[in-house]
Length: 634
Image (cartoon, rainbow, N blue to C red):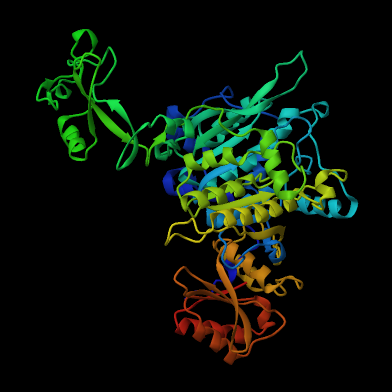
């Protein structure tokens, strides 16, 4: 049993320190007196280290500051927003209202290396769509100040006009720290897809090369928009956007094939008792595929008329079969071989390829996605107003999901917009019985006062996204009712809503040279650590996040020994955490004994609940230790 009072600080981990720790573990000889010896590191790397100031890379004003923005710990937390949630108790989906830089830091603890797919549609930097309100200064205080100003003064969001200078640098300074943090969240076999136009596609590709590594570049996909924008005769109109695709580790990248389209299925014009199929000639075609290349693939087969058939190509040259004899015999046993006569009456073997389970290769040009105009109509049909000019089509995200996810993957979109990604995840789950989970992050950007969105009573883009998820989920669930296979998981069309806020606990600042004992003593001496207006659910959410729990834990209120507590259950239904978080009611020793008797693994008690009674706290610690229960105070 451990009393972990000092292990619940109000900040996220310091990523610079984590990197140094990793270096210490990997290269201990490069650590001297607790610090990284950079010169020793260069010496160890020898010719692998860049020498001098001339080196290849993407550089811009503010890059170092942008990197520090990603590394700076945050005191931010998330507050549950029950009123704007749907199916809170059962859903595994999450919607977060707030600045995505701070949210990405909060997600690091639990979701590190767990996200299978990240899709984002960031601002394209056209001079009109740059919505981040901080004048390219990062930090929670800036965000909180802005949200107060928006509520009180109606402050407009920031744009990034070319006339203001550092046009590209400002955009890169916004994207760089967010992509750095996003990479940490990707699973080893995860991928990121980023939509972008030609305004920044070249800079974004260089930036992604730096963050993810050029060796993890998968491809650049041109996506037809269905329309041409920019009708000025002096310019070239744009009819495509781009998708840049990178893997967390290309060696672990295993994409899925795409499902066949109606046009693809039309080619399967033959059918037997197992369904529709197409055929492929068993002889390997091509002028360079000859017997001498693979002699083991040149052997006779017996045709239906008893004659021997060899892989002979046009003009009589000796070709080869597609596979070895063992595989061919297996296909024969499975009824997969079909003999046909050619125009000269000679038998030729063909292999059957059935429709079921077939996929096709992904190409780098997509012209089969519904256009932006049709996507706008879809949103208008759901929300009753034409709120977005160019929302991403659901079909685009579904295609990405087919390629990059398994049926139980977690999908993250931290530029959520109107929540197209959430819509697509729910739709695909309804179609294939999957249990994919989505996490959406969206800034509460105000809708323009004279816009259709404001006239429809949507005050922020975050509000629009929640409304769309709700209405789209209802429509999908209604359409899927009775169609899911027996035994499949229930369709999840709900979402837990959270809002970004500052920590509920006292902040502390110590210099880097304070030793561990002094740090522990400082934290142990804190009193009134929680804010008075914080609810038990808000306090528990922050504590669980700091301890590495997810945003969808099964939490329920209960009464134990006359105390109002919160129970956190694991997947088996056992109580993983019992938390007492009422700072205004001091528990008795008997009530604390009841908590220990009820707990199975861990107890969390708010430090303020002891009201300065160290003896009571010590007694609880001893009770917990006697039962093998881990005790945390916050």
